Amino acid sequence: MQYSIEQIPPNLDKILQEAEQGEAVQITQQGKQIAVILSHAEYEKLLNKTPNFWESIERFRKEYDIEAADINPDEVFASVRDKSSGREVIF
Image (cartoon, rainbow, N blue to C red; front, side, top):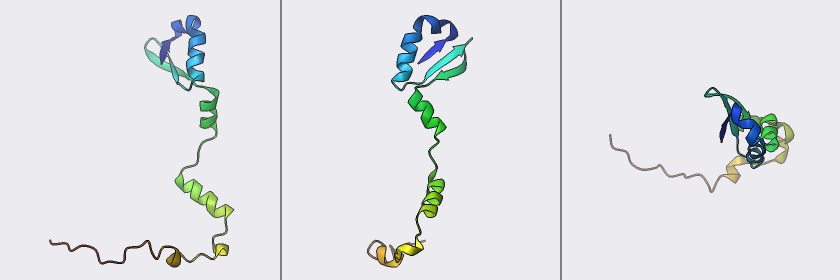
């Protein structure tokens, strides 16, 4: 939803209710976006940034000693890998 600065006072209850329901409410001034009102839950998500894939891998490696697990990848993936030569390609 989007509201201009002038629309905020008479619609404050509605705006806060929309934000509480998870909708990002955009505030404009003279047609230009100047602010966004978010629910507290959405704000917390932004503060507690979810790590990307690589950061998650690095954290996993720090938390778990893979060497101590004594896992042989060749045994684990033996039945998964396709050992065929593949299809014939004609150039």
